[in-house]
Structure formats: structure tokens, C-alpha cells
Image (cartoon, rainbow, N blue to C red):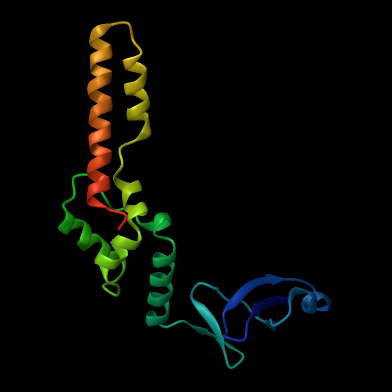
Length: 161
């Protein structure tokens, strides 16, 4: 038998298949089970029936996920972007439903991670600084200083406040 496990709000928690005699073993406290097939991403249970989520419901769920997990899904930045371009990307990403200036202040760490240079640039600089060749050593000094300046610029742009 195909089954759907859901909660009192109608959220589909899991689906599966098992013998009829084992259906009741599929639920925990405060869960309900019914026979059927459903997609937990696009459907929910209403009045003991499987129904499609509305576009508004899907958009709200997406926004909620994006607000809670931006580091998992926000990947549209590039180092060359202006502050205005970043705001456009963020507004689009959050569907124009949150105050971007507040979000940027509260999530400065996430933004810093996107824009910090790769740590391998720093390691490469330190290795070059250890060279006995004065030309390579000087190149390492410059590379390390450039890395530090980039990081300080990012810290200045996305302050802790």
C-alpha cells in the first residue's frame, strides 16, 4: 500500500509503501497517515485530500528557505559587482519581500564569505615569502599584502555593526 504521513497542518512529512498491516507503524505521535501518492514539495493535505500548493504557498516556502539558508542557495555574486548590483541580486533572490539593508547587516558573515579571496592565494604568498630567491620572495610579499588589502576592503564594506 502507498501511504502519506502528514501533520495536523497538512504538511506532508514522508511517503512510502508497505504492507497494509504495517501502515500504523509508519506514524509517530501527532502524525496521521492516509493511503495515496503525493509530492511533499508541491502538495499538502486539506480535509483528508491531497491538494496542490498554490503559487503563493510555494513562493512563501521558497522565501522562507532562502532566508534561513542563504549560504546554500545564494550563488549569484561576483567580485566585480557594484553595491547596487548586489542589492538587485538580493532583492530578486528574496523576491522583493525583505529589507535588504537590514539583511546585509545581519548577514555580513555570509556576504564576506562570498567576497573574500581564496585562502589558497594567501598560502601561495606565504610559500613564496619563504623562498631564498629574492624575486619570488618579493612576489610573495606583494601577493600577501594584496590579499590582506582585499580582506580589509571586504571587512570595511560588510561591517559587523
